Image (cartoon, protein in one colour):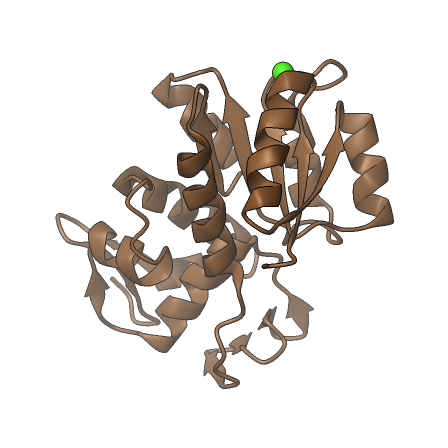
Length: 231
Ligand code: CA
């Protein structure tokens, strides 16, 4: 029994029922919404631990819902897995750039979906260390799970937070995409290496207005490095 609450946003009832059945059996608490309006009402009422959002919904696309939730300070940390019939690689990147933490293409097996959910929830669990790390005014407060640039809070999604927190505690070393997947994503076999690039881009964008994006450096042919020294 995990007790974690998952909200399924999907207009097709048979699919919703199938997913809900599998999740309940795995010990999750499940709530359901058939469109984005219902989803927003439910989230405002009782914030779930994770959202499954179908791409095609009647009132608004699941992608737009994801964007809205990730822009909202109250919901930006809730992990989102997008469900879609689109197998197209560019759609997948669009989904991830829209703020989704992962992506599952229909038809999927209940086992695959469960593995993805478990992996996403595992990597959003607070890391335990209570340390404060500071690099030239960029502060990582692991106890409160906050990142500050001077006095101002840096808004980060859960994956970007994990990535930055890994980087800030492992500075001046180059990590390959595979190493980052292993250390930050927990070696989830379903996540592809290009996912790392998507989240690196998002992390840089979040740090950009504070001038800290320069810390997240690309090392050609090798991977990425966090360093306050010029490249
Ligand atoms: Ca649908």
